[in-house]
Length: 344
Image (cartoon, rainbow, N blue to C red; front, top):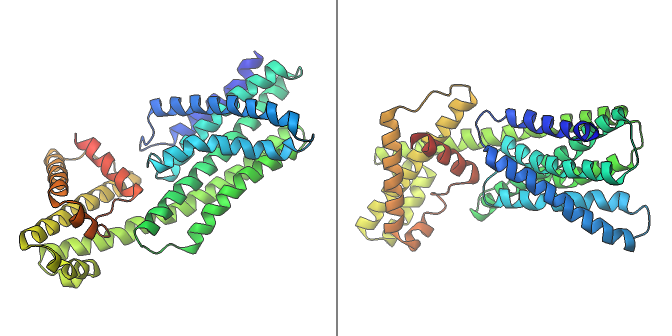
C-alpha cells in the first residue's frame, strides 16, 4: 500500500498533463519512453550522489543535488528540442513532465526502500509534492530548451531576436533549479509544502503559457501576413511589391532563366504549403478541427511531392541562395508534418 500511495500521484499527474494535449502532439509510445528515460536519469543521479556524498562536505548536497538532477533530466529533453520533437508549449511541458515523473517514481521507491518508516499521510503528500517538483521543474527546463532552439533558428537565418525572448529563456534555465534548491531547503509540514509548491509552479507555468502564446501569435500573424503577400505577388507577377520578392529579383541574374523559373516555383510551393499548414493550425487552435477535404489532401500531397522534387533538381547553390526565404522553422515543420499526416 505504501508503494501505491507513493506512485499513484505520479501516474495522476502524467495523465492530467497528457490529457491537455488536444492536438495529439506526443504519442503514447513517446510518453512511455520519456518516463523510462526519467527513471534511468534517477539511477544515474543516485550513482553520482553516492560518489559526491563521499567527496563533498555535508550540507552541500542540499544545494548541489537539485542542480545536478535538473541537468541530468535535461539531457533527453535537449535531444527532443534539438531534433524538433518539441516545438510548442504544450508538447514541451508534456515531455518535461514525463521525464520528471519517471524520475520521481524511482526516487519515491528509493525513499521507501532505503529511508525511514513513514506514515501513510506523509507518504501520500510527499509523493504529491516531490512528483510535482520534478515534473514542474523538468517542464520548465523543456520549455526553456524549446525557446532556445527557436531563437537559434532565427539567429542562423539572420532574423531579429527580441531581447525579452532571450531574457525569458535564460530566466527559465535559472528558475527551475533555483525552485528545486528552495524546495529542498524548506522543512515545513508536507501539506503546507505541497500548497506552496503547487501554487508557485502553477502561477509560473500559466505565465510561461501566456508568453508562449504571444510568441506563437507573432509567428502566425506576422509570418502568415508576409507569406500571403508574397504568394499574391508571385501569382500576379508583381514580385517587386514585397521585400522578399525584391530579394528574389535581385538574385535573378545569378541563374539561367529556366533555373530561376524553378526557383520561383520552389518558393511558391513552399509558401503555399506553409500557409496551408499555419491555417490548419489556427483552425485547430480555435476548436474547428474539421477533416481536410479529399481534394485538398490530394493537392497538398502533390504540392509536397513537387516541392521535394524541385529541391533535388535545384541543387545546393540555388537552395542556399533562397534559404532566407525558404526556411521551415521548428513550428513550421511541425505544423506541416501534422498537415501531411492528416492527408496521408
